[in-house]
Image 1 (cartoon, one colour):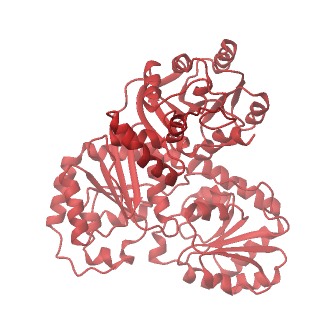
Image 2 (image 1 turned 180 degrees about the vertical axis):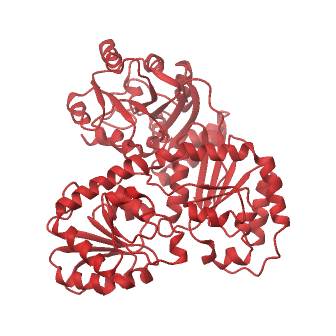
Image 3 (image 1 turned 30 degrees about the vertical axis):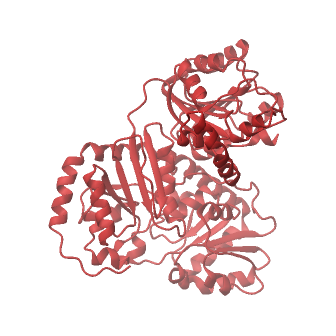
Length: 573
């Protein structure tokens, strides 16, 4: 059943995170549905599955599963009977259309059950992949149990014929992207085969694209294509998940929408093509050195709307201060993670929007409590928190010594905290981790310690670490500073004000696995219903579209702010 449990990440990235009702044809055991609902827990998810065993397992994940072939009239009738007058806004075919006798008719018939503007997302094998071309040149066409020549495939498509199939069924083709496997082998094959394509009058770029794709991921829209806004985001080198939270995750959510063309990167980014100049986002950029200023001014002259994003007190970095905060004055608008930070930024730019940090995906988490078996796993992992945990150090280390047989410590990044734990403690250390790995490690734990001292810098931080804990099913013990801004946090988090309260809170949770489970479930529910990018994305898109609509006025105001700036001091990082 492994094949039927897979979730194609390239297809998953093309499913709008804002979907309300999804229909997947060939839902297997529900692996793709589970992966999507980890991103959009609010979605109602339906499936049609040919194989009874897989369909039975899928019923534990999906809202509705219809057993049988979608080409069977009785199966379609059962689907219609169950849905009543409800329509779907996403239709998914993951490696299914090539198995059908008449995929054109299926696409047309199901389109009639879709909402206007609904998206059809398809993954389909590429008959023009270099490996098949090579085999044909050698006189071979051998069917197999899996792969491009799976013996159950009834239809074969190139990119152009797959796009044409969508169009014939009444879908407006939106995009068609290649899935490239084995990059090194592919590059060598392209070099060998491109001359042949050119000899037959082909185009080199098209030949490379078409020969490289193992599969095509295509999308079509039910009705006219929506106006597309281009959004690009430039982040800094990734450290501690900050760029993931403010660039990668919100842009990935936006990119899933048919109305957005989005690109993003750390250190460099390629502007999205196929749309007029839109929004260019600078995350944590000082906008202080001459080359960067010239680059941004060049983008502004071409019609791009420039947005700075910041999620910490900018006074912490001399680069902002010494440049007279040009990063905020010299752009059209600013986005931040909290209202207190927005209040500060408004002294340099009145166009500020607050987009709180969110979870992009609910990580997989073990069901038992404690997750590790006999010992409760306690997590500590954050950048630059040495001064914050110093006040509770003695109480934590005392407890770690006394309860060495009941706690398994998991520490990320903070070597000093790890070394301070007693030698007899069960403890594991991880260096600074990429965000996905960080979340996977966190999700294996039961309790997390989130100390923050009351400083001007900390008062402007966001509650990201608490949201990460909630989404991972981890109970945070935390300071009140920033983490108690939402009264709902008290349902699942435990607040501690004094060193003794920190010790007592950890002791109480160690003594009651049931209370840990109750709070972890409440935290997971909080994240899945209130703190997901899937829910925040429509407001973010609307904000960017509004900026573009008002760009002329915003540009005049930006130029006035730049003209009024003081001469910058020498800039240091």
